Image (cartoon, rainbow, N blue to C red; front, side):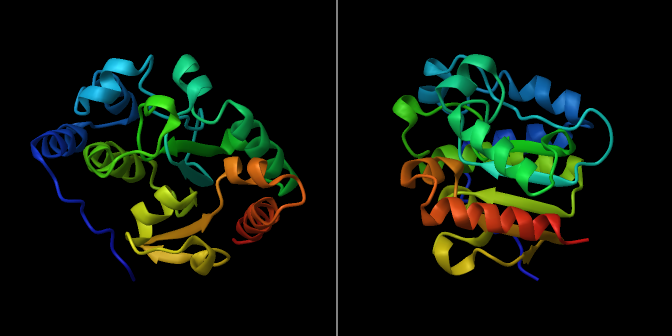
Length: 208
């Protein structure tokens, strides 16, 4: 069984990890996360800290973890509500999965300027929030969307095309990795990323 490798922490990342670990429940965690200023650039340009969506009641059937909020997510404070979110919802439904039964998160909770890829220190500083979220949600299955999320779970040398299509046991969870819906949009409805994403969702839906 693989274990998550703790990122190299600076003082800000260490403080986030300590603060997150003290949160007794989801509501408490969301409250403290929304005031996070660990990444000065992101804190100065964001509209909202996008903590994530969780089912109204009960343990989530699946935890979906993307990269970072985009413009629509930053405006609304909710994850995956733009074009990528619409496609994700569609493909979840086609696979027989209900988004309302899923938790939807990102490895970084604030939108990077111009939707750039999150920097390594930003991922490290935000990791404390995500680790505590995974502990509180206690879901057995996680789906990592895109390479940044895949690397968070499986390590920096991860090659997405080589690890998708099967579960990986990480810290007692079954972790699947697949293409981000934005890649499916970029390559079109007949492109390989969309077909792979749909196939991986169908495989997850078929597991007990």
